[in-house]
Image (tube, rainbow, N blue to C red):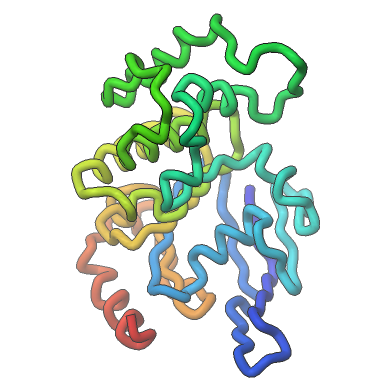
Length: 257
């Protein structure tokens, strides 16, 4: 279970540009829950993810994982239990390395490194099996540099790498926003399948209201650091895009987006 308790976060404190984004914000995410998060620009969506991952510090409050306080835990330690996929496909992969080398790095996440080879030939058949499930033909391109792949192929590979090893949380930061519609659909279908198979607690920020409604078992709409809509379970499953489109448009106009 992930708990954010009384989170307070301000930007540019003590200046005329000071913004208090979160003021005693609270959120609890149950194990195995798939939470879709929507909201206008500046609503706190990405800051929420960064706070969970430890990328930015908080001013006050506590972050608990299964009752353990990780508020002051360094981000690289938190990332041992977190898989994160960014909007930019280049952030989750190494372009100058091959697909095989990228997968080997992900495969060794959290493990000790010695002076042996970076890639284990015994794992190649396993990598091919993983890639074949993506239906992009990458299983036959193991020695291709990742920089030569399309954005969609790289993003799909980044998603696979983020979930190769057991993780407690999957953080998706608008991971389909930079993709064309067809590729975005492929990545979302793979996302849904991975989350279901691994039963991993997932928080997905997206600007696509249809994805937010169709995927996950909980939906949050953020505005000015608050969750103005929070629907889960049967209420979430019964939702339609039209149910949140009006509110989304209102706050987007209010914020000048």
